[in-house]
Each structure stands twice: as C-alpha cells, then as structure tokens.
Image (cartoon, rainbow, N blue to C red; front, side, top):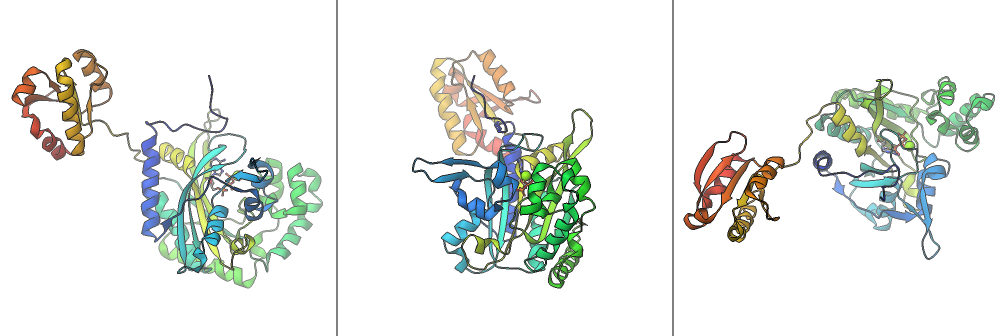
Length: 426
Ligand code: ATP
Ligand code: MG
C-alpha cells in the first residue's frame, strides 16, 4: 500500500464541513474589513524566501522543501504566504494602487518539521496583509480582524499576546544587550542557539528547547530598549485595543519565527486538545502576525510598510473541535428515490434530475439494489425522506412520501415534492 508522506493529511468528506465553515467565515470577515483575495503559486524562486523570510531563520535553514527544476533553477515550495504576497504586489504594480492595500489568502504551506500535534509538513493558513499604513491604528484594525474571526468561529479561551520588537533604530542596541547577556552562557545553549548568538540573537528567545527557554527567561527585555517612537506606537496600539474592548497580555517574550518583523508582533493562543499521556491541556499559537515595514524594500519593491497575520487552519479546526464550538455536519440528502424494477429506473432518474434542478439534494439508486437494501442505504446516508417509484406511481403521478425520522407516510403528487421539501428547508 502506498501511504501519504509523513506530516501530511487527507481531509475526508466527514471533516470537510468544518474546513468549509472556516473558509466561509474567514472570507466574509476579511471582506467585512475591506480585504480582497489574492492567490499565488505553490512554488517560488528559493531566493524569495531566503531574502524575505530570512537566511538565519529555522524556516530557511532547516525547514524548506527546495529542489532544482529541470533548468537547474532553485525552487522552493512556499513555507509561508507573506513573502509570496509581497512578491506579487511588487511584480503586479499593486503598490501604485489606492492605499492602504488590503489582501487576504488561503494557502497550503510546506515545512520540513518534526510532525506533532498541530505541527505538520503540509499545513494550511488563512492570512491577511495590509500595505501602505504604518500607524498604531492600522495595527489595531488588523488585530481586531483576527479577533473577530476567532470569535465568529466560536473558539474559546483565546489569549492574545502582544509585543513590540523595535525598529531599525532601536534593534541594534537591543541586539548588543542580548549578545552581552548570552555570551557567557553560550556553553549551556543548544547548538542552534550558539549559532544564533552570532547571526541573529533575538532568535534565541524563540527557541523551543527547555534549557534555552529557561536561560532566555532572564534575558534583557526588548520593551526596555525601545526608542521613543516604538514606545509611543505600542502605547497607542494598547490604548486602541482597550477602547475596542479587545483583551490582551503584553508579552516581551514574543519575537516571532520570521526575520521580517518590526515593531508590533502578536499571537493568539488557544487550547487545541489534551496530551494523550499526561492529560494536560495543550495550548498552541493558532494565529500569529506582525508588522514588516522593511520587507517590501528587501524584496526589491518601493518603501512600503505592511502588517499581517496568518492563522493555522489545522489548528483552528483542532481548537474548534476541542472547545466544542458548533461544528457543522456534512449535508445529508433530502430525499432518496427508490425505483422498483428496471422499468422505473429512467423515470426515477429524471425525477432526481428535476428535483436537483430545483436545488433539492436528491439521491436515486444507480447500482440496481433490491428495494430492501435500497431502504437500508437510504437510512445509512441519512436521507430525510424516501419515495418509491413503481408501475402505479409512474402511471398515476402520485406516490407515498415517507418521513424517515417519524415514519409518517403522506400521499403526494410527484410534482409537489420539490415544494414540500423546499418548505421544510432541510
Ligand atoms: P510555531 O512557533 O508554532 O512553529 P511559527 O512561528 O513557525 O509557529 P508562523 O510562521 O508565524 O508560525 O505561521 C503562522 C501560523 O501558522 C502559526 O501560528 C500556526 O498556527 C501555523 N503553523 C505554523 N507552522 C505550522 C505547522 N508546521 N503545522 C501546522 N500549523 C503551523
Ligand atoms: Mg515554526
């Protein structure tokens, strides 16, 4: 048997409705906030991610699916969406359109990670990006979009954590403070973090290793090193969120895993399940984002500030299931039509066709089952009603409509089935 690659998943019909619900809700929420949809390729030049996401990040160093195409060009399956959107904005001249420019997307992402709960090698994101505004008010708008989405999805016990990681002006001094702090502790750090100390010390704060985490706990806080401008930006953002009644926790530990972030960064954290062994509740970041004022220029575009977020859809599904949000069920047939004998097959098929034209979910036998096994099947697929079509029914145009839940039977004209079912609105 051929099995799917590690860290990938199949989404089966029974699970599709919750994904569709998330897509529908995300789309309508993005449109409520004035965002338009953008779609982009599954693979891009490797250089886009090396420059955009950052050479020193885990994503670029360890997690990318990179391959050479037949012309010897280095290509990479997108590990995230933001760099792709920025590339598309520049290439298509969207930077010349009315600002702010607001875009949303659904995308699959590919990262060579160690698979675990809520961590896959192919996963799905819903993301938004806003270009052409660098104000705290635009940050508050973006965060409120994410907040609205999570509320609309019925995800409970969500914690919003916010930080400001500084800008080009204040980051260098903070970097030095971090290097000074970690240098005499470097022997205790993991190998990756020893490298990070040289290339990108802020990444150490994001390390998942418990030892590095416990050392990083006492590291200098970025919030103590912000310039006046960044501090003011942060104060205003916090005030706006308070005004909107959006609860949040300031968390100087959040630095985010991608290099392009400046100033505001944020994460929404929620329970997605319980650990099978310990029974402990597992909380994960379900949505994360931040400001990236230098990214468009980095990728070769004009000076254009931006801010966005991506919600991990696999984690949204898990959080909704775990928090027992109203999870939609797959739609069931409204009526099952059972032809009795060969002569009725064509008639029944046409009846099903006519009902479908009127928007009724009608099913009809196509495998030549006996009446008994047809009824069993109708029950199995959850048909709300059944109707049997035999010689009599074809001649008189009347039949018995059976309600499968109550077993109630009603004599009806075949022509009125659609009206009856439409009135029921199942
Ligand atoms: P983490 O710290 O969990 O590794 P990240 O910082 O790498 O996350 P981002 O690149 O910001 O994550 O992606 C945004 C969101 O996408 C995350 O908050 C998460 O919900 C989801 N996500 C990221 N990596 C994965 C993965 N491997 N599998 C499933 N979802 C993921
Ligand atoms: Mg990651």
